[in-house]
Length: 473
Image 1: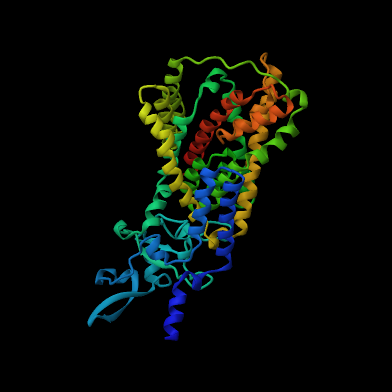
Image 2: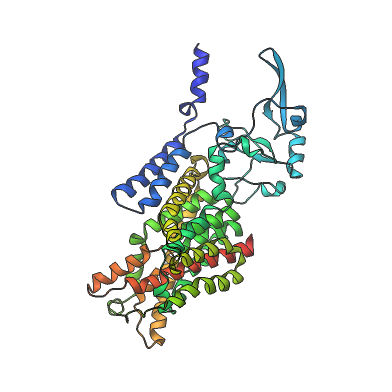
């Protein structure tokens, strides 16, 4: 009876719970608190926060995440497992016992691409096939796949057949496919495009340059990450945080560095929520009071023909430059065409409301659940968050500085504050610019002016993502 009780407790979450899980659950609760109490991006932080709680409850990951088959096996499966002949219900069957990750046969299967090795602790952050043993070592002394048992000796590595039957996969396996296969981010962009009014940018095309300048933060952080020893793919996944665009960050990280996805996504969304805290000090440091008081000319009216043509022409131009970003750019401009055509009102409203809300819920929970303590509470994660805020700061500064330069050579005055809206945190960054300007002059309305570089930043971050994917993918 005692042994039965002990075995039961060991199979429960309590028996496998570790201090790291408690830390991550508390962080998830903190996200929910900030969303509910402080109103920090609640539509994002509530799903992510609860996803973090979900992802840090210990469970049988083989059944829940990847759906690895652990029942009776046939003679054909013998080369994937060490098996024993056991008697069940009076009948002798073959059942897998110890995985063969440490055998010569198991290594041969991986080298020939016939199987993948998965460490149970990493199942929620890594997925996909293995080209060969070289992919196991990914720098920084880390392994996204493991040939040995996990440090706590609870979850051994297993050799999993490459041809996993999806019918055996659990709920989270399917949920995470939306991230792994690059489905959720483009669908978010569809809703963003339907919600976005590109009129302020079209009425003042110069703001396109401000949105482009803000993307310098991406490549600045990428260079710093390379100096710190990250691989080019990892550095690109970290640098994209500077675009302040969560879906784009997820899209790039899932393609280039899946093992960093949880940390990169969490950093990107965290900094998006903290735009009102991070940006104002940088904006004030780089501008004078006189510059912050500059009033700009009212935006010109944009014709309906221009509004309809823009998503088509804009897509063709950007997609031919960066085909790797085709899913993001295609859905962004398609959503905007639904909005501006004025003949697809039902589709536009669906994309703006129910559709984007559903995808946001699924994406937020998926991202949160990938922040398991075993792979999140590391020194590397600290580096990612530090580099992320460096990227964000550089992006903000570059937008402001370019606006100052343009103001020197332009006949029409530009308030340098709007350059900070070049990051693609729409419409948060534009609101922050407006609020900072209002504190200097309550009668100076910068919101519509700031929306120009803000929406340009959305396009800029997607183009930057395409460049990185083309160069490193």
